[in-house]
Length: 490
Ligand SMILES: C[S@@+](CC[C@H](N)C(=O)[O-])C[C@H]1O[C@@H](n2cnc3c(N)ncnc32)[C@H](O)[C@@H]1O
Image (cartoon, rainbow, N blue to C red; front, side, top):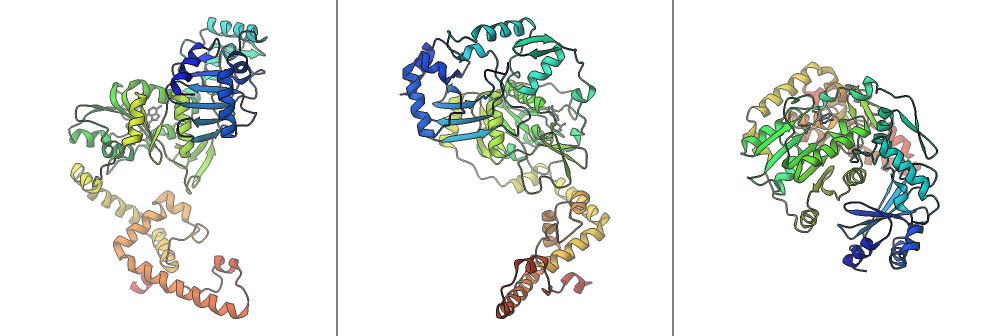
C-alpha cells in the first residue's frame, strides 16, 4: 500500500480518533471496519514481530510511519496508561521500541469511544464519561492533558476523581506551595559560559539561523548565548523565570530550550514548558538536556525521576532515545537528533526530512570565536580556577600525587576523597587537564610507562608460579609503585 492510498483509506474510516497528524484505533475495531487496512497492518505486525500485547494502532498521516501501542488497562481504566510502543517507519523499515515502565508521567488516553467501532457495547459508557468531563471544562486546554500527572493535576484543581467510569466530586485541592514553586534551587544551574552552548553551536554549524531570522532563548540562564549571538549581529531575545523574568516571550524563527527540561523536577511542568516553547517557534525548536553518564549519581540523591545534588539543584539525566520519545509524545511530531542530547523539531515536517537528507555541518573554530566574543573571559576563568585550586591545595595535591603514582586518573576506590574533590573543586578529568597544562603530559606518561613495566615484570614472574588472580591486580597488592615526580620536585 502506498502512503497516499493509506491516507485515503484512513479518511474513509467510520471510527478511530482522528487528530492533526495521526489516527488511533483498536486493532479489533479495525478488523471490523476496514479489512484491507486490517490486513495491511497484520502484514506489518508480522514483519516487525509485534506481539499481542499491543492493542492500539496509531497511523501517522504526515509520515509513512505506524505505531503499535500497548494499553493493558484499555477497558478497565477511564484513562488508560501507555506501557510500551513500537514504531515502524514503513518507508525505511526502521523499528523503534520504547517501554514506559520507568516513566512517572506516561501518556494516557481520552475519549475512548472514538477508538472503537460504532457497535461496540462500551461506547455508551465511554461517551457519557466524556460528556461529563467536557461539562466540567476538562477539555478546555487539550495541549497537555495527554499525560498522567498533567491530567491528575487538572482533576485535583477541579476537585474531581473517578469511581469506575464515573466522574465524582472529591475534595478540591489547592495545590500546596511545593507543587507551585520549585523546592529546588533551579536558578543555581545557570552558569557563566566561556563559549557558545552545544545547541547554539550546532545551529550555527548546520547553518540553521539565517541573518534575517530571529532567535529566542527559552530559559536563557545568565544570557551568555544571547550576548554572543547579538555581537555576531543576530536578532535575539530570551526569557528566564529567574534571571530574565521581566523579558517577554517572543515568537521567533528559531527557539532554543537548552538544558532547561533536565533541571525541572516536576515531570508535568516539563510538558508545559515544551509546549510553550513549541508555540513560540516559527521554524525550528532545539531541545537539549544532559544525558546519562557514568557520573550521573555522583554526589546526588535519587529524587522523583532524577537526582537532587548537594547544591539542592535537580538533574534528570535522559537517555538519547528517551528524550526523543518524550519530545515526540509531547509534540506529536518527529524530533531529529543533531548531537548527543540535542534534538531539532521542525514546524514544517518537510523541512525535517530535508534536514535529514542534506545535512552538512560547517567546521567552526569555537576556541578562537569565543576569544573574540568574550576576550576577558578566558583570563577571568583562569584566575577563578587558580583560586579554587589554591583554596583546596591539600586535596588537589593529594589527588595529583595519587594520579602520578598510578600514571592515570585514580578510580573512586583508589582515591577515597573523590566525591569531596568533585564537589569542592572540579571533576578528576578537568584536574588532569590542568595538571598537564602546568607540568606537562610527560610526567604522567613517564609514571604510566614505569607502572606498565612493573606490571609486566610482576605478571612474568607470577607466570612461573601460577595464574595471577585478577583481584591482586585490582587491589594493587605487592605491585611496586612508580616514584612520584611531584615529590621529587618538592
Ligand atoms: C542549566 S540552566 C541553562 C541556561 C541556558 N539555557 C544555558 O544553556 O546556559 C537552566 C535554566 O533553566 C531555567 N528554568 C528553570 N525552570 C524553568 C521553566 N519552568 N521554564 C524556563 N526556564 C526554566 C533556570 O532558571 C535556569 O536558568
